[in-house]
Length: 93
Length: 433
Image 1: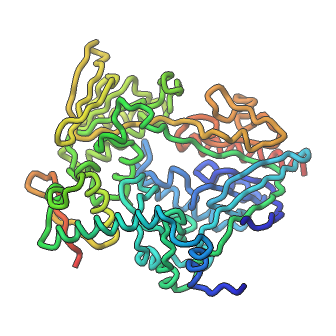
Image 2 (image 1 turned 135 degrees about the vertical axis):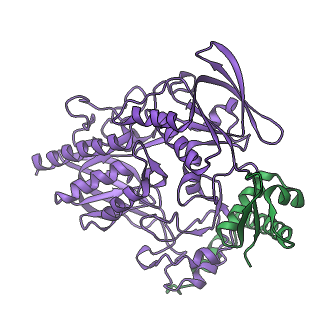
C-alpha cells in the first residue's frame, strides 16, 4: 500500500483503534493547568508563590508547568524581588 | 510487527556510545576497521554530554564532547545505531560473533530531518523531559537535547496523541508513523562492551526524602541546573522556584554503604560535588554551600588542589554522616547528622539538599552472551580476566571491556580505558586476520 507522506499518524491511530487513553489524559491535564497559569498571569507578572495561591495547586507542580511554558516561549521570566529570592513571570505577548 | 532480519558484517561491535564507547570506536575506525556503535539512547554521548563542566579543570563538558561526538558521527568507518539494544551475541568461531540487535522506531527519518523544531512547536503534548531529569517538560515530538547527535527529532510514541500536527508542519515530510522495529543479525569479529554505569536510585534511601521532599534533588539534577542548556533561567528550588541560599551536599548516597548493596567508593562523587559547589558559588555568589562527607577522596591529578581551591572559595566542609532529612514548613530541610570530629549528633537547616548519588553497575550485560560466559566481578561489573597486564580483556576471547563497565572511574580514566580496549581489540583483529 502506498503511504501518503504527512498523513501517517492517521494510519497508526486506525491501527491502534484510537488515541492511547493515557496520552489523552495527560494532554487534558496539561491543557487544564496551562489555562489556569495563563489566566493567573493575564493581569500582570507574578512570582511562583503568587501563582500557586491563585491556581490553588502544589508549588512544585506550578514550578514544573510554568518552567515548561517558559521553555516553549509562552511565558517569560521577569525580575527578581528585592530579597533576591523569587523571580516574577509574565506572558510572552 | 518486526521487520525481517538483515544480515550485515563489521570488524567490531562496540556496545554503548558514551565517552568510552565513542573513543573505542574512533580508535578502531581510525585504524581502518569498520565499526558498528550501538546505543539504547536517541543520541550518542552517554552521560558526559549531559554534564555542565568537568573536574578538576572546570572545562565545559559540551565543548569537549561535541567535537568528539561530531567526529564519531561523521567517520566513514563508523555506523551508529541509536535507540538500539543488543538482544544476544553468539560466538560462532575463533573470531566471529553473531549479534542480534533490535532498533526501536524513531518515527522520524533521520537523514531527512533538518532539526527545524517546527514539529516541537506544533506538538500539543507536555511530558517530563528525561534529559533534564524531570525538572521541566518536553513535547512528544522532540529533539532530545540541543547538542544531541544525531540532531534529529524523535516521537515519544507512548505519550503521543497521534494528532498528526507534527506531520502537517514538517517541511521535509520526515515524520513517519508507519515505521516498525528492525532486527539486525550482525556478523562481527570482535566485541567491546562499553555499557557504562547507572546512578544509584536515591529513592532507595527514604530517610533522605528524595521524591518526597521536592527541594531534595540529585547531583545529576543540579548538573542540569548548572549547565548552559539548563531547565530554569537560573538555579532554583524545584519545590517553589526560590533561589536557594543555604545549600547542602550529602556525599556517599548509595556508595560505601553495604546496607544498600554497594560497599565500594564511587570515585567521582567527592570531586563532582566539589566542582558543583564551586560552580554554585559562581552562579549564586551570596549562597552558603556545605558539603557533608565521610572522607574526601581527592586522589587524582590536580584533585587535591581543586579541593583546596573550593575551601579557599568558602565552601564549608563538614565531616559528618547524615542520618535523616526532614522537611520544615516552607520547604526548608533539617539535616540530622553525626559530627564525626566532635563525636556528637548535630542538626543543621538548609534550603536545598543535593544528594551525591553513587555509581552502580549497569546489570544484564552478561546475559547478552548465549554460548559463552562473560564473568562479572564481585560487585557485578564486567570482570577483567587479567586486570594488571591486560585490563581490557574479559573472560571471553575476542570480547573486551572499556570505561565504567569495569567499575567506577572518572572521565580521563574512562578514555584511557577505552584506549586500552581499542588497542587490545586491534591486536586481536590483526592476530586473527
